[in-house]
Image 1 (tube, helix red, strand yellow):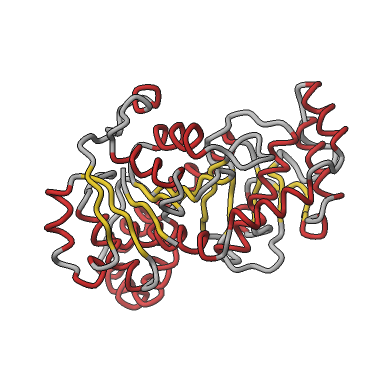
Image 2 (image 1 turned 90 degrees about the vertical axis):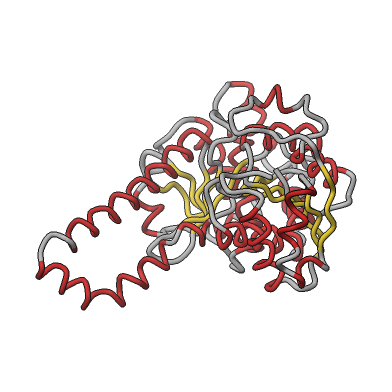
Amino acid sequence: MGGDHAPDIVVEGLAIAGERHPEARFLLVGDQARINPLLMRHARVRAACTVRHADEVIGNDLKPTAALRLRGASMRVAIDAVAASEAAGVVTAGNTGALLALAKIIIKTLPGIDRPAIAGIGPSARGDVVMLDLGANITCDARNLVEFAVMGDVFARTVLGLTAPTIGLLNVGSEEMKGDDSLRGAAEVLKASHIGPQFYGFIEGHDIGAGTTDVVVTDGFSGNVAMKTGEGALRLIGELLRQVFSSSLAAKLGYLLARPGLERLREFLDPRRYNGAVMLGLNGVVVKSHGGTDAEGFAHAMDVAMDMVVHRFNDRMREGLARIVGLNAAALSKDQDDGGAARLATAR
């Protein structure tokens, strides 16, 4: 029931995802009176769905503390299904703050994870790039950043199919002495860890779009600002192109000549290709679709969730964490003391 155009685009997106993943089974949580007629239009996916009725809906403007009290809301019922192992994960276009709060309390974090992080995929000059955290943790210490790097490594292997993704720590400069104690402490631990050969070092803001590394690790404040700055820059470029190609008759003729290339560019930068932010570090798969997406965008969020389930993301996360636990524990403890360094539930 989540999103600006739910439940219509959710069911339509599910139909697209069902074609791509015919082995999957889905639990749809929400208003049966609205969902069942929509399923009647999609016979194939209807056979793979179970509908569970939920009377309440968590609105986009509802505070997380208030959302926690709505036990009959569709988002809560879906998350309860994951916690009870009835579903491997949940996909929703609903309230982000409520989703994070409910998931942390009900699904809980994986053993060894201090804080979950929000990860997303975006375009770069060399292909797709993973960035985390995108806003779940405003401030982070060295331990958090190291955990984010392990999460990002497994996520890039699982969803992007990379065998040895390179990892960079976002900083104000690439030199080793730059940054605060948390960044420098995290860098030292990562160098000595099992992902040390993949660790590129410090990167700067321009390296994100350049694709210098496959994974960009940062705190939630910097990550959220970087993400929204990038989104704004893409929208600006689109608007400027529209203005240029409509400014004169010659420009309009030029557009006709350049149209094939511009169409390829539009497809590459299509935000629907990158829909589906993932809350990593939880004891289950949790994917947040953009609230304003369409069916194709929601289907992509489903694809991300399916990849994580099929390729055993959380099992691989546990293996990665087990290999890094105890590594330079004294350095991480000092950093903290110093104050520095598959079946998917689809609902709101």
